[in-house]
Image (tube, rainbow, N blue to C red):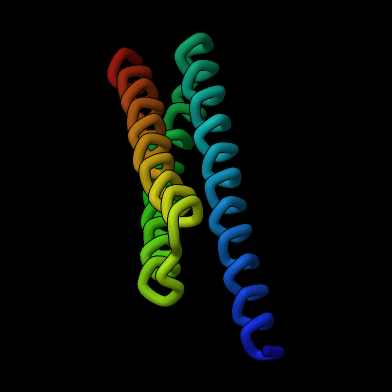
Length: 114
């Protein structure tokens, strides 16, 4: 029984880590959007280049979230609400990554305009 509780505690901790990864990714995309808009408004090439360069980190974060999610599915065989929570994290990560791509696109337009 003690071992079973430890596994469930680890599983719960892994679910919380997955959620934390999504929150961190939200913050990264929020910053990218604010910086892209600022670069556009001010025609700031340096800031635009930073946004474009930062896109790779967000892409990597997405793959990390997917890896965490798939590992949970493969090792924990989650049921119902947990499975929905995990698959939702994967979809959210994909959408956030797409939003970051748009931010990088805005930044690239700033660079082209200049």
